[in-house]
Image (cartoon, rainbow, N blue to C red; front, side, top):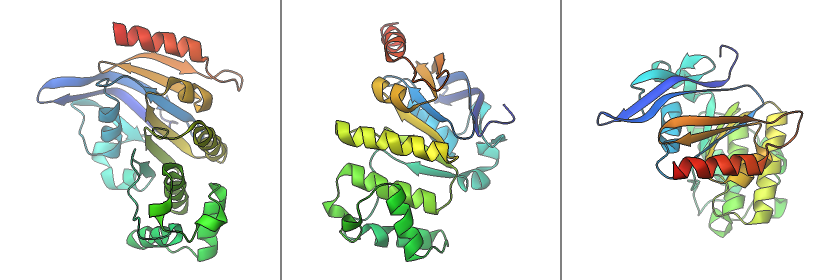
Length: 240
């Protein structure tokens, strides 16, 4: 796993002495999109929080660029951008104003032209750039947050249920954007319960059930992962 951008090495996490993740192993290379699938209570959020450094493993490790996150929290967080299910941006500010504000907090200087270039890259229409985010759809807010991540030059994206609440057209647009970012070298880790969406966009899928990674699926020869195969495994896991 030494060449992996993101990896779990026998990762186990417990709450109040109750094991929530049990010896989970996977790796994600640069430019890959990894989708972690699972039902409610499977351990998806726990996995995500461990990689974000808000939970400490009981044993094993969650690694960013080969280093355990819990031992290198500050350096790990500089490499990542996190998009929660509900993107936290200011509704009374425009897209450009939001990005300028959050970049200033990180002491990152980017010109208005660079911000506009990033908004163009994520396909946010120019006529929306100067509108307040209170007028935005969820998909538009996501694009603004992704543009911010790009301007922060974070090579790794962590996404929590990124397509929840999006209409089918917005989901297709989001998947296309993720593929473009991966092709440009970004490494993407998404937590989701959307089997179809995961199969459409991911190079690799992990299926989590009751804290254990019960299946791993890989895209072969630039083909999408077979939705029916993953769906059957997902249903079997839920019913087990």
